[in-house]
Image (tube, rainbow, N blue to C red; front, top):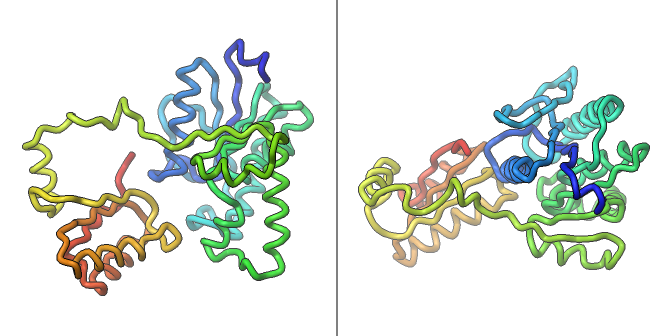
Amino acid sequence: MTESMDRPLRILMIAPTSFFLDYGCHVRILEEARVLQRLGHRVTIVTYYLGRDIPGLEILRCRPTPWRADYEVGSSLHKLAFDVFLAWRVWEILLHRRFDLIHGHLYEGALIGKVLGRPWRLPVVFDRQGSLTGEMVDHRFLNPNGPWYRWVRLLEERINEMADVIVTSTQQGAVQLGHLGDRVRIRPLPDCVNADFFRPGVLSREDIAARRAALGLPPEGPVVVYLGLLADWQGIPQLLQAARVLKERSISVYFLVGGFPGEEHYRNMACDLGVGDRVIFTGKVPY
């Protein structure tokens, strides 16, 4: 793999999600693909049937399941079926095109890439964005005290060991994999902001004041902003409870919450907690 870095690489990027949607995991995939393109590499993204095409990116999609074209965000049996269709699409592509490297996002992408890329001896970069079992438990798809937990945990460890290189989305993620020692190269690649697009000084003070007013925010004062998926396992209930604690302590802080799904559910929760006047929901915010 070191020798291949002297020339542009043909990278097969496996994204086991409905790329592109406007939230964190997808943003990481998008920005990494753009950076690789700017470095001169050719990136082909293979993903689920649903999602939004992005100009300038080659995106190939698997077919939908015959019984259901969509699936809910998070772990589900439908997602497992989508992964089977995604693996089949990857296999078709590998049979007809040549690649130098597989970049597998999430545990499913790394597993598909390593197994199917083996006949061509393709190295696999595993883009790890959290624990497989941890996510399944958070989504209440896997019982940590149930009989399947041990086997899923063993699968997670096996995928960790299969990768040639693991890049983690946080420094903590790299620490969690420290037990692998020298068996796998681990490189932290924390999420960051595209400073070419998100930068201060774009709006004048008048523009900022107008936008705050349009959102129902006071002209001055601190604002806590959350942008991402709205789900219990993302900590939204705790965020709203924090807003209540601050209000009870007469601390004037407003919360601007953008994202999807479940907007109406959490708006009602905020009202029930007595902070409906302090928490403003914007709905989905295009990236």
